[in-house]
Amino acid sequence: MTAYNAGRRINEVGVRMALGANRGHVVWLVVRGAFALIVFGLLIGLPLAFVAGRFLASQLYGLNPYNPVVALAAVLALGLPALVASFVPAVRASLISPMDALRTD
Image (cartoon, rainbow, N blue to C red; front, top):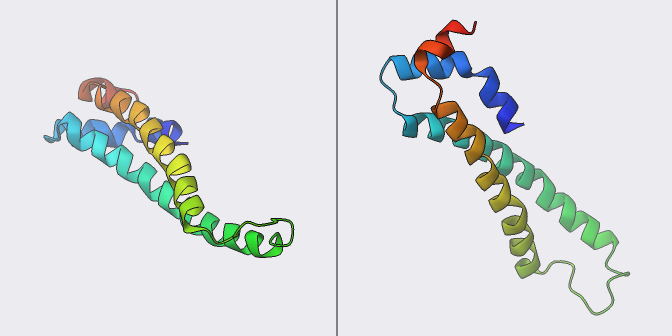
């Protein structure tokens, strides 16, 4: 999804770089968009996971369905790889020449 969004914004990246944005600004632009999607997904997923834990509490013999350590581990296990994976399209978008980006449309 991040690669698709970065690909659609090539013209915007070209204009930003032509007006003086450096590669770091472009990487931050793409990663910030991906981070917003990750946070949105976690804000929806965590409450749903706790609701599901309440319904499955009878199946979890001897376990606490509201264990904050497990929730934190799940957030880290899902959030960090997604954030790291967003750097590949971000760096790819930052390596595009402004002249080529403006010509593609």
